Length: 287
Ligand code: 15L
Image 1 (cartoon, protein in one colour):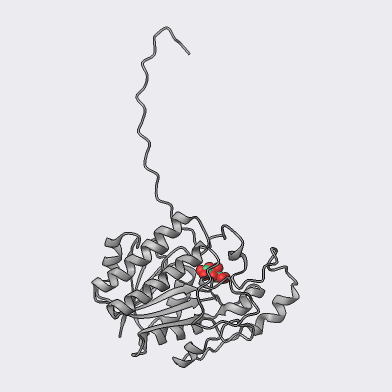
Image 2 (cartoon, protein in one colour; image 1 turned 135 degrees about the horizontal axis):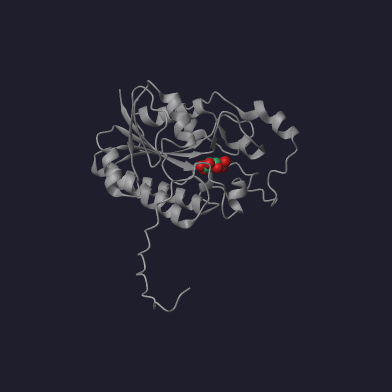
């Protein structure tokens, strides 16, 4: 059985993926946050991937990596820089140093979120990130390309939509990814022998999809779910899904400066301020 590292295992996607992959791979989990509920057959290592030593430690001795770790929405540049630029580099470089050939990288629909909704795009389009977060995902894709071409690593890039049991609004009807379809896609990325460098969209077989996911189909992906089952219920709410009226695929990411973080990172403690010396008061000064 393959030993697979899942970085960012305590996040939303990691938690759902673990549930689906249980018993199929030996799972080594890592995250900056503590793991609440370790299942049988899982091991956990706390790690801050923005530190190379941590990235090297958790990637040692695994057969493959599913790199989910990072800042998962639009947010402050420094958080994105540490987690998604430096952290992502560290994971690729640590994998190379440790001889781990295969990496599955969780890219995002936000790497291409500035494409309009009325355009069907495939895996060959030029990136059009909709946010600093989207830019960081394009950076990860570029690293993947470099490490595949230069070091012969096997890289599987998944432009993931929104993983959930149930889509929550109109935009997510187009980018919904059910946990079992995610697991199917990840298993293809882990188990197909002939992966060198591939880009696929991490979405279910949604009727309202704005992706041509033929590259994933070519690799054997056959999604079992379609968000259309939830469409009537969601559309009946008549919500104004995009108050800016911007019909970009990335929705709010294309016009908001920050998006609420579903899984906030623990803040590093600020360095304690040096204590000021007590001033000598004149005994007469009083208060
Ligand atoms: C993403 O890339 C995020 O990681 C996820 O939290 C969702 O916001 C998703 O995109 C989305 O577009 O809904």
